[in-house]
Image (cartoon, rainbow, N blue to C red; front, side, top):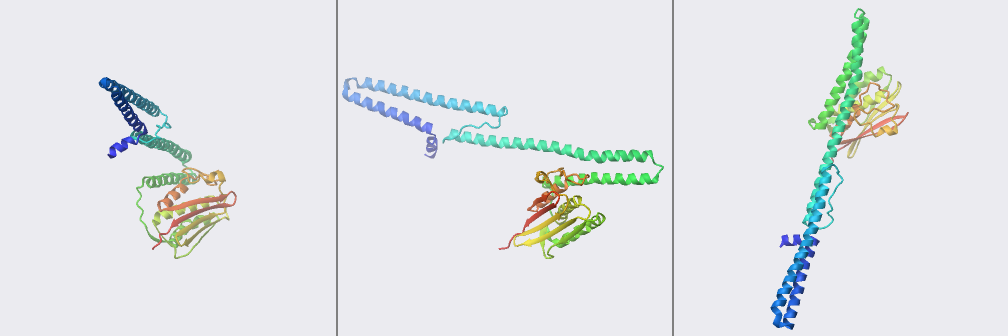
Length: 349
């Protein structure tokens, strides 16, 4: 019974059944009337009306299947067009019935395949752009190394020249190592192969590590580095990875701040959230650049860090989000930037 009702949910099949039943009833009534009025020819009338009923029913079935064949032919043509490269093709399925249900499933499958194809296309483009960016980033230090090596080879008799360009070569090698290490870290995060060693970490202790890490550079460049926040603040996190992320934000602030500038790292706890701010009064970020700064290899047009590789902020974002946090940037050109990080603190009921 359930299968029969499901078949009748198609209005075309329902109409087909209704017409055949109607024809049968009408011809049966006509046969009964004629048999009563002309009993001597009753058999002939019944036979003729039976043949007429069969002919009309067959004609109705023929028209129905002809319409179904037309629908299926149109669907086959649309599927052929989809296979030939038109991802927008969809089969009409705005009615009830098993055929429309089949068309709906085909449309769903087509949408999924189109999404996969688009993702694959974007992945290929991203890979191409990434390789191009990596090649560009490696080209500069490698060219510099080639020049320094040529100078050293041409003037090996001067120890001061050898020492100077050996130091420059070491700096360029450090840049290459930094690029490779950051790429490896981001790749691991993307692949989900990083196992975070999470524990209750005092934020003040983490900030002390960062203060020791950047104090010498800030002093050398004449910049003020300050940390402030409650000592009792704690966060469940991987201390190494989160220190890496915050360190990238502080480095970014130092890179974009002039001598005499101030970089402030502040943290505050709220009932359900921990907030960390990294503020500077440097050159700031153009409004049109602000929405792109977390993209890999992207550098603001106002950047004063000519040696940057554009991986620090994307890495920081990836680490923060891996800890179920959020990060956003606000900036005004000439007045500095503020990076705000939020971590939700699970509440105990």
